[in-house]
Amino acid sequence: MSYRPLVAVVAYHLREDRVSRWPHGGYGVPGPYIEMLREAGARTAIISPGEPGDPEEILEPFDGLMLVGGGDVDPSRYGAAAESEHIYGVEPDRDDFEIALLLAADHMRLPALCICRGMQVMNVAFGGTLHQHLPGMPGLLEHGVPVADTQTIHEVTAEPGTRFRGTIGVDSLSCSSHHHQGVDRLGEGLSIGGRSPDGLVEAIERAFSDPERDGWMLGVQWHPEDTAGDDPAQLALFEGFSTVARYRGSRARPGETRGRTRDYEIADANPMWADRFEEEATAIRAALGDLALRIEHVGSTSVPGLAAKSVIDIQVSVASIVPRAPFVEALTSIGYAFKIDPLRDQHEAFAKGYEPESPNKFHAHLCEAGGGWERRHLAFRDHLRAHPQDTARYEALKRQLADEHPNDVYSYVEGKGEFIRAIEAGASEASAGI
Image (cartoon, rainbow, N blue to C red; front, side):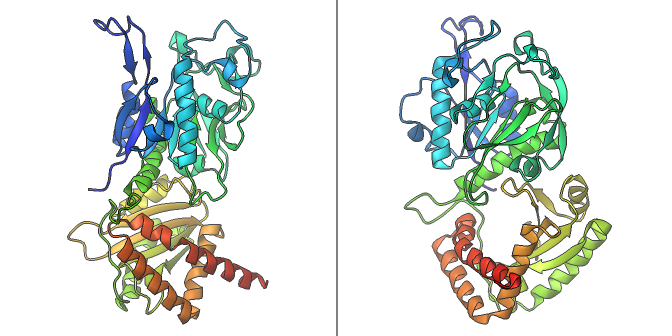
């Protein structure tokens, strides 16, 4: 069984009369948040305001952090006075706790998913401000009124090139909304992931200089837990979050050598790898039909003479990977399992053959034709095919990393990154005539 990441979920206060026979109140988290995290493969632990200790110390045992809905952020947190009688449910100690945890998570590169109030906390934590009462603003859609327990369904359109769009796998989705505040000035270091038709910011994400290696922090203004049970795009938010938390938690801890991923080994080059690719590529072409523009053998098994994990990497170039549903339907019909790649907006990952009785393992990588993923992987493959000395260096590195990181395939992959990026950069310069 693959490692199940442990996610910290911050609770809110329950007033003294909220639960019968609890005379002194308590802390709670609505069930659907927890249920959707579990559905996505995560373990959960509830932490509450007032927990003593340094924020990084509190988060140290966890692989991810989730902030959920609730009352309003105190306007003084973003330098404003309360401008509306509709301000409700302010919990100063919760504001303190969540902002401190979120900034610590950012420093630790701990993945974070922030929902409704959680997104507002995220924006304020990075210096942003909020609209204090949306119903009083002209030109906006109905976004629901939390204290009246009203709910509105409206569309949210994803911005191209964002992790938000890459995670949900669609251009737009229908969202269950019941909030009366929203983002005004965007916080520093944040970018917009999606908007509702009235232009209101509905998704934000932390902007990173190297999205493939840095952290993952996403905020959504609506309540995906309301509809995730029936909407794969909403569930994908929890699955993507769980995936990056698993990446982080599966790696060996400092001072340890063993990780928490499946066993793997480096095998000597096998001339049958090319035949296995051709056979599987034929099956993929039949399943995808005209959706597949090009199918290429990539990765180490595509380079003659190079030792590799005995997994055939297949690159499938398509016009657009959004929406993902047609690709998922086609490839799962021939035995592939789909796994969201929440770090890259031009890539979808599928795997096949990991059952104990299966003789061959395959990874199918969907990417957009002409995009960066396609160009980089073809350039790396072609460079190794043409430069045996670099191939030998790469093989030595792979064997070293496999020895250093047993049961830690993510650290193994990350350890190859600098070598791969250097080769890709040189190949790009050469192709450009620099």
